[in-house]
Image 1 (cartoon, one colour):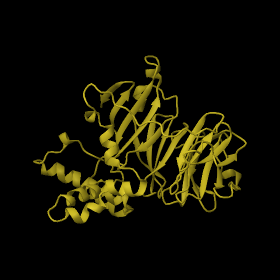
Image 2 (cartoon, rainbow, N blue to C red; image 1 turned 180 degrees about the horizontal axis):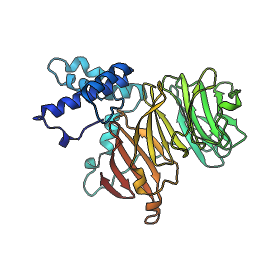
Image 3 (tube, rainbow, N blue to C red; image 1 turned 90 degrees about the horizontal axis):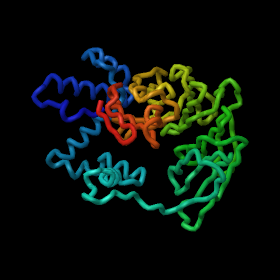
Image 4 (cartoon, helix red, strand yellow; image 1 turned 180 degrees about the vertical axis):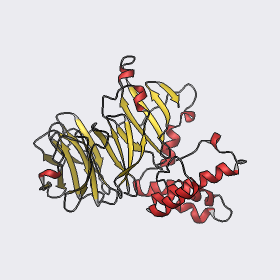
Length: 358
């Protein structure tokens, strides 16, 4: 929910107070205080609606770091170091490396070299996921196999464990504890596997299953449930313990296929994308769509599946896909679209090698 520098006028006290109130409302929604947030939103006449965001917390932490005599005490709680400690990635260095201005004039920017190539599938690889605690990579493929690779062994080129399915496997994801994985295939039944024993579990109630193939699955960060998006147009929420569906968003994207699902870090909201060229943010507690991000349809009818994701602060959401408009003009018909999580207005449209700020 970041505002651009041009939109911040230090002399406009009224506008800045409105922005402060919006950030407070979004923070309350993010932390689960929906009644308080709704009361405040009604009191200040917040329009458009404020989506959940922890931007206020992040700004407070940055401000306290620059406050006299507090920099040392708060340095350990900075967002970048938190990400480094939990994921093992130095976010600041990654962002600095990707910044165009860091590249020397006349020198082409080079990516990181390939350090390992793993061979074991016999057909297209459709999904990858890293173990949350160990150096293990899981892969899914159209060869009807799920394979687990130990990436700590430089000499290991093949999987140390393989799980065979009856159909082509499209999606795979680790549980946050790493002891189970979920997988979906070209059939509508979702499978839950025990990583240690390879035992397979499915929901015993036929009416709980999707009616068409599942395009995306993901565990919630708290591990209590997982979400699935299907070609039948529905989004389903499943209990991890019972492996049963406890909520269904019917026609989540007006009947179009659901392409992807993604949880927020607090496990309270779900971001979905569909073939209707839109992204939606859902509040799981109330099963309602909080905000719909539109504008992707301006690039032409969406014909391919696209994954909707948040950036690392959840202030922005974006999607990437091939579009029909570009396919007639270039060999690489790719589109990138970016929204602010606060507003349903498209901020940036990048198709092929051209950029447009909306």
